[in-house]
Image 1: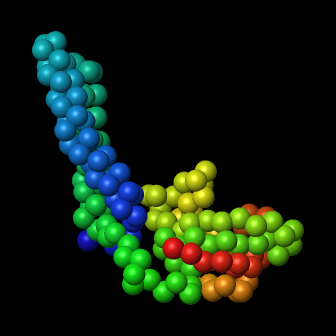
Image 2 (image 1 turned 180 degrees about the horizontal axis):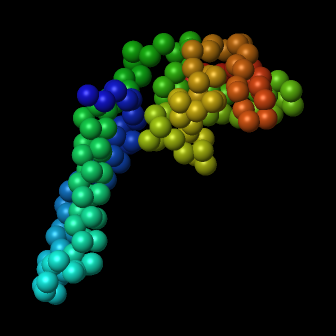
Image 3 (image 1 turned 90 degrees about the horizontal axis):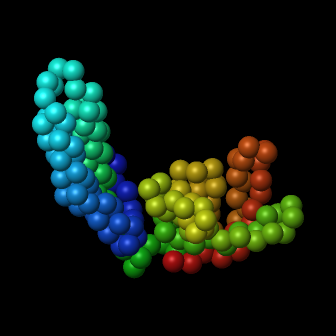
Length: 157
């Protein structure tokens, strides 16, 4: 059994949609490729058939992994969240102690992380440094350039 991950409703819907797409269109496309390759004759020397069978194996592996993720996914219930500390699905506004720059990040699961939209993984160095911190705390983030310090300005859900 995999570990339970928390998602936003949109994030979980996206995962379920992708899984459905792989199970329907993905499987159908692979079946067509296998059938077309099979129609070309001798399977023992048919590279297209072998490639299609390999692709089918990879598709089934991806489906199995995604089914496990979806099976262990939970939608975050914001009413039960301790809003005084940074945690999954909280948006944390932080200020770089050294240069005064402020930035806000939303802490999400690895699958939902997207730096362009300000969503960072709990498992990332920033995520690990911010989890459990409260407003006014100084978070120390282990970055490639060394340890960076950020003051927690605001936590929202």
